[in-house]
Length: 243
Image: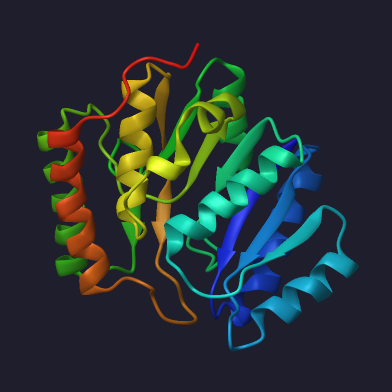
């Protein structure tokens, strides 16, 4: 079973399109893709729309959370639910249409070839970003280089949110020990998987900035990520898998 964890907060204008695009790719490639919407009590009615879609569309379900507690916590709740559902491959994906669903079969192909974690990468050959300002590109790329240098990781895109995990990766990472709650958790999850010896590969993707709605990025989230990188470096993480 393949489950896409799709966190939402005020994504009513994007959600129906995102779900429809996932279904289109699943049907076109004859792959099973279940969409798990994780809504953090969106005031714009996203949760209600998600329930409507779950009634209308096969392979859609909804997890309602009581409040907005950060992207990391939303994903962790989704990961645990996906594991309980029996998922063997679990995706992270944005609901704002920034992540092109046409890449989904390519993630699965790399998992089938032996990867444990596939990172959708904007910064390898064939990848890229569209509709970002030069300053935002510089901040994003600089953040990746910063994390690479401090943590000694070989991967070029450490802050992206389009990923696919093999089940055993999420079973063996201690999610309760992950500190970061904003996008810094993206760095931490990859770092923990790498240190546990899992095979991590990068898939070139083109990220297209959202056309509708507002970005959830903030100064506080960015600073949390910068600080958390040093916490990981100084504190360390497990380097062997549980017996």
